[in-house]
Image (cartoon, rainbow, N blue to C red; front, side):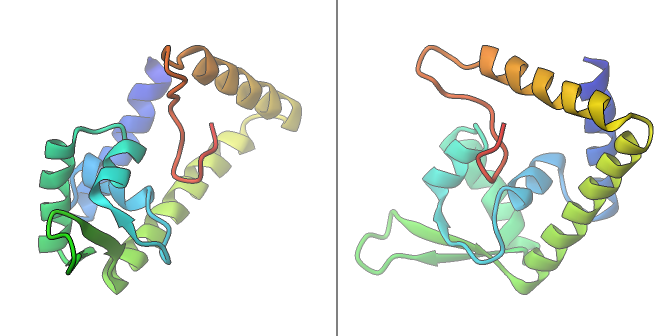
Length: 142
């Protein structure tokens, strides 16, 4: 819980400095710069309800970090992708995450870091629900 609190605090600080909510930052990070996804896929990827994801998408579109294109054959479906500003923000935030990881790694041996990674994967695996849904990052890694 303390680790989660510290990570959340760092993410909130970075998000606030960039005029984003922590959930908006999470959604930005869950997109690869070159991909296009549906809002349903994005909601599932971020473990959010469609209505919550809709509000986040609206915020990211209004801040010009996300493109939303309505499908001409099915108006209920929209395609989402990062804008050039969204790609820049995504890369900036990924660099922030790398700096955090480097800070952690600088205080641990390679073996200690490997043990922690393995323990976290086991913890995430143990948290899977009865349907096999697990908590993963945008690349599908635990």
